[in-house]
Length: 181
Image (cartoon, rainbow, N blue to C red):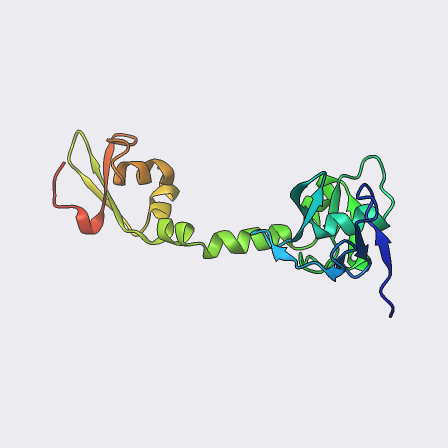
């Protein structure tokens, strides 16, 4: 299949973009290098009015080749691959459609379940010492304590020394607790 090239609007024929997601500089007569923007999207550096600015390739392709509805403000990657900037993989959509597209919500839950912060909160054994009675309650994790009516975030704040107590208990990591109340 042939690659179709079109001048990028508002660049006075200095740059062209293809329906395959490539960007060409007529000025330097070469294909421009694309780099990751740190969030998985590809970008290129284009010069306008003597100043270099970074442009997202998927937006350049969409703005050049796709007609836009007044409500549509996002460019959606249909296959969810942020590096696939082919015209056939892009569509204009609303923010709401983009947020609900595909497996994003599932991926967010998986990310939370496997993140170190989440796992640490689930697996650090803690002890809550009642300020008035000195009674100790032992929990396998902050999340287990949360299931018993406490808030894991507040327990974490106590363990880190940010707060002194939560719901009438002083909180410690079990391995750091030495029977001090």
